Length: 253
Image (cartoon, rainbow, N blue to C red; front, top):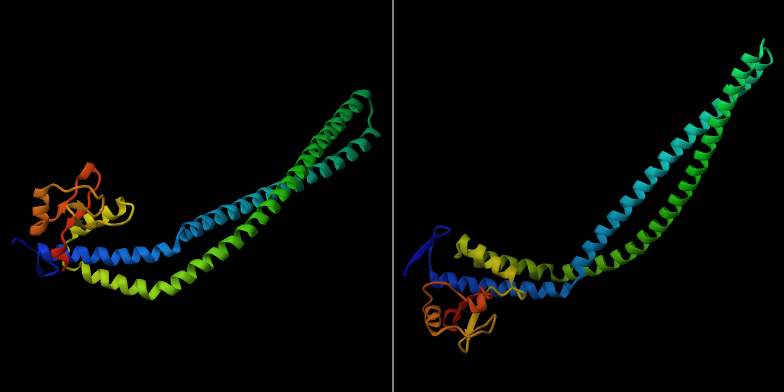
């Protein structure tokens, strides 16, 4: 029987098949433990992402408010400066020598008054915008508080489950690493790929009553013979969808 060297030890194909089956049993136990968590890991992650987004939104709105406050201070300085200039122009009007100078100063005063009018219009817009943004911050902050309550409750529940099962998962993980030793990298890659692609995580299944233990479709007689011989790994190709490794009971005894 052909053998392949793995981790400085020669393992037969039957030993590799048995190791794959043992690995599958261990991984299935870990899967069952993970089922206890249900949707909690995804829910916790979703809430973490949502909270991060909400907090970023609050930070951005605060930055926008600060920018509006800066513009408000700038406009107020412009108004104050325009008022000073108007006062100076009016004093100059008292000392003009002709109508042309008087009219020129009057135009300057009118220009500054227009600048004040425009600035005050902008100030009202800034005030309204700041009010709207502060209301949005209050609304968002309330949502953050609500989501935080949900997050803490779900995180505590998840942490409790993980704490209760941590030792069991650690032990099983150690067993899985030991079970992997006879299996070469190529088979492990294929095994993990199949586990990801099937709904129940079963990459290695037994043949029972001439049928695949994964898709339950009948396996052709010749392929059953190949599986029983254990000289190579046989993949179930029923309906072109299954893709699981099939083994027989005599390999697992």
